[in-house]
Image (cartoon, rainbow, N blue to C red; front, side, top):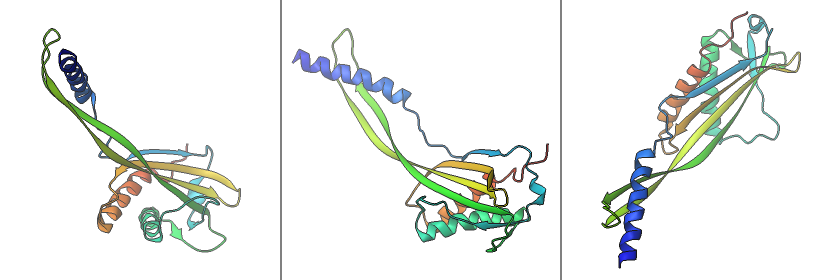
Length: 184
């Protein structure tokens, strides 16, 4: 019996620090990163078209349309024109992925005093879905990547279509905030 109580007390002792140390991986804002090819004159680009990356996996047609709609809106706001022409100034391609992570929240009750005491420890798992979207822009004339950006955010796959579109619009607005890069 003493061994059982000691085991329970030890588990409770471990659970309390885990509960305090447990922090949410979820972030409320998007984590955005961008990079561009040095020396690129973005002022000469006026049109773009969508292309696909060979071998890449894309989401279903509905989500694909929502992603492109969010990017198209930002590109239009920046003065770019979407075209299906082979002569577009920029080729745009994206890739998206969702990763899952398990977060453990733990807490304990009871106490321990000089090896005596009792308590209970509880650990609860939560699955966190993190979505990442990478947007690439290529200069087709030079066959060169000229701009790349990525946006990462926790996502709820159960959101309504409207909520998903709102989140995508916000993420793409933030991602393309400083696009096109200013000449240096």
